[in-house]
Length: 288
Image (cartoon, rainbow, N blue to C red):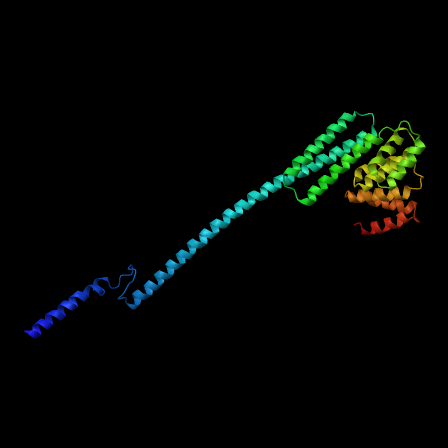
């Protein structure tokens, strides 16, 4: 009887522990979180399945990174397009300043023009500077724009102060004009030489100096026009070698190499012993 009771207790203990052991019905289930009882083939399948799931997770992660980078690129493109629009606006402003400077040159040549027109131009230019300053432009571009504005402003102020030369002798004006030129006060010098041209006093020399001023300011088309006028009035002056050299250089910098070569050749033929001819020879050898 004692042995029977012991057997019953042991059987009950085994039965009670049985639920904690894996069930034979779940063996080989690859979808189970913790599969067991797998055959070698099933273990291989499980390993491949896990590898595929890992690749899928990696792919999803890479796709998310690609989407994020694409969004960043789209954002950068929008910023770049905005900056390009501002730069185009700046370039248009610079072109307008160039037009205004040409307007001032014309006004200098005709001093009886309405001074109110110059004031309006100056106000318009000042407003343009303020507008562009509020937008983005790099320092180099802004400095260039500011320099153009200051040159225009100085030209206007000089015009207002120096514009009335009617009470002075032409000879005195001519001497003062050359002094202003040598001091690189080109805006003032332009007023004086333009006044002399209007009064028919040394027009060949005055046109030459106006050409030199335009040449130094990089206005090569204007320089060529002044040089041409000067040479047509008197082609025996002492400054002819320089005039021909700078005419050739102006054409070269405008990209008109054929005309530049013609003037270099003429200079060398007409004034072979001049310093300008030596420079012309060097420049001519570099032209292709």
